[in-house]
Length: 201
Image (cartoon, rainbow, N blue to C red; front, side):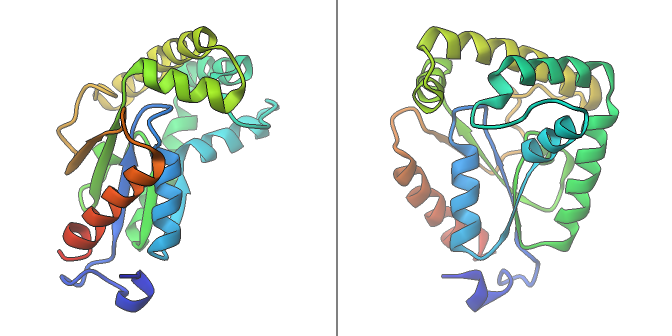
């Protein structure tokens, strides 16, 4: 079932899907795959913030940028200047209103009302293992980088919006533990949810 064949859900509303999950959970991979399969726009809050970092003079090439020293330095700057996150979130909310989009975002599940929200759960150890393999660093380096990054990021969102990233699951319609699943298995399950729940609403 492709969106090009269906255009909208049965209820007549445009499709808006939010994919959440901490780094290494597979959220960005899943969001991109769903956008391609169902002919939806793909929009990443992380990519938008990274573009702002580039405009501020930070070097932003390659995978694993957020866990790098440059990424962590930009996190410190974001902690002191909330306008970076606020401007990105305002843009994402505007995009969501147009519909037919998959949002790869940590904030939109809490800020959007009319969206289907999936959270991909994974243990810190499994996420560090995946990031170490992706970025060619040691498991210990990946785990330490995740801890530093997530502590700072959680503090930003707690102060801005009052939610506890990775702890508060109230907004989510569907939660999937990906610890023991390959990305293709996660994708197949998400497609079942899309076709039997989201597009059938």
